[in-house]
Length: 201
Image (tube, rainbow, N blue to C red; front, side, top):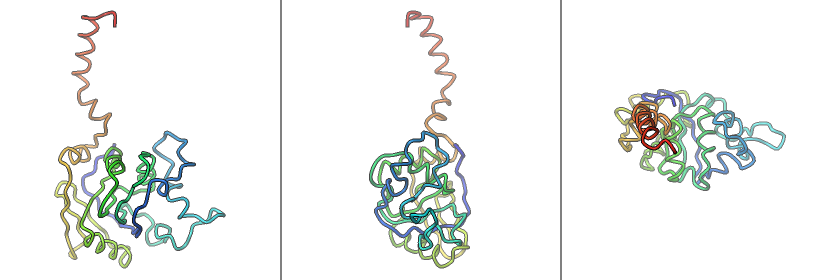
């Protein structure tokens, strides 16, 4: 997993509340177990017309928001089912950070496991960031995980909270497999001893 330290990038607004995981990645795209390739299908039903062309009024389709790596969105983002494909699709679209006034718990946890930083801020701060992303789309937003700050130039700086263990994992690029491999020597020693003590296993 790619470490997350400091991200300085464009932010795109998705001014919707209660965006569930079936909106993020519809059920017909859940056949794959690969973490890549889902970005093109993200937000499929609200992103594309019936003929496959992009809907011009969908915010993430607008030219000024192309290439954004930070998503500003409404409260209760990622509600619905527990599908891990949702953060896979978000990441494959190019987003490394999602900012909201609130996330569904399972989606929130899955973000951390896939290298996405979900930041929860008070609604009034999210509203400010949303307005900035809409009105000044080329201005860059800076996310500093070490300092736990969200900064928009000299306009404002917001502090955010994060669990210390989650922070450690993101800073060091550790997913569940990476965490396990940190104990590789101890695991190998245990397996060798068990093979000697209990060869019938």
